[in-house]
Image (cartoon, rainbow, N blue to C red):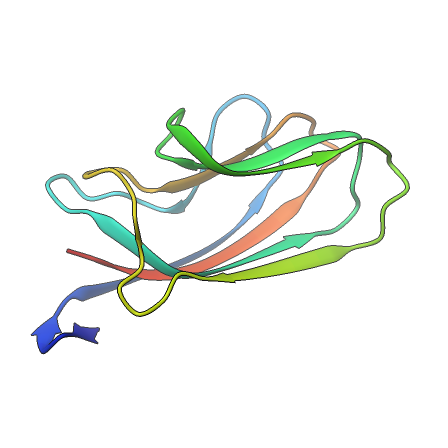
Length: 115
């Protein structure tokens, strides 16, 4: 991926998140590198009462969270564009997702680069 005339290693990942015990990897981190996210698509299928969240590393800082108060919810999708330069996660960390109940399923697709 080229940004401001420099080439960077592209990163992409897709994962279905329905784990309540630990974060599931969408894009793995690389030691000594910072992951910059350019684009994320978040799709919810059968939604139960609970929360789903994206974190900066396994057990890291939550930067997106969805609270659902009723189980009667239609499938929903969100698209987030962080721009050409992207949203920086903490150095060495990757993009992870977790839910508060195994009845809640999120599908996450993300694009970015390592710098």
